[in-house]
Length: 226
Image (cartoon, rainbow, N blue to C red; front, side):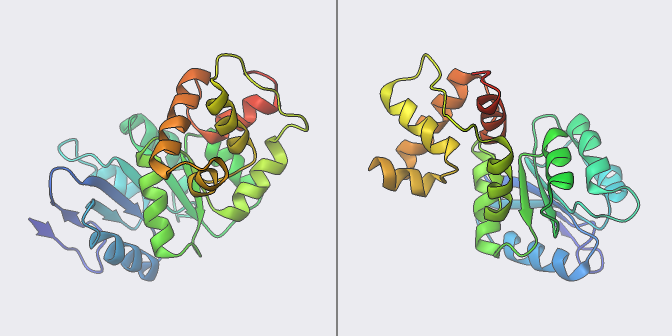
């Protein structure tokens, strides 16, 4: 069943039960249509809601088909994406949120991450990379655009890496790669492992260190809290 409203705002869309439910919130109709069109054609994604404002999203959110990943624009009119973050997390405590924005300055990055965003991506991100970012957060990782990653690393990365206790030698190598800002593909190349194995090690590191993702790991490593 599919219900379309205008250019796609207020869209409800049912697909295969094993796909990932996705919601988009963007006030720019061109960006909203582009993302909705591209991501809606992906076999592993199920668009359940496409809205032009945070208020519309919260009003139309259904408990019957909750999204697993939400992509809100940070600079929404009315209630901003940043203001909406705690409300979205309250309504959808198990959902991951990837903030979309044109801004990459720390004054916007850190509040969004501290309010519960699992990712922070620039609107200039290619569509294929946006799809990959959605997969990453759905698999339990954080995702940041490369330029944003550099800013986060510059802020959080400790001068000398402290090696936490309780990790196996291979997990220590993965931990170092995470602190160095390497993506799974780059870690696989460095450690001579396939990406699926790397992803498994990353999850083990997060679980053993009791962190939710890369951002918390970097923050706690910088403060020697691991």
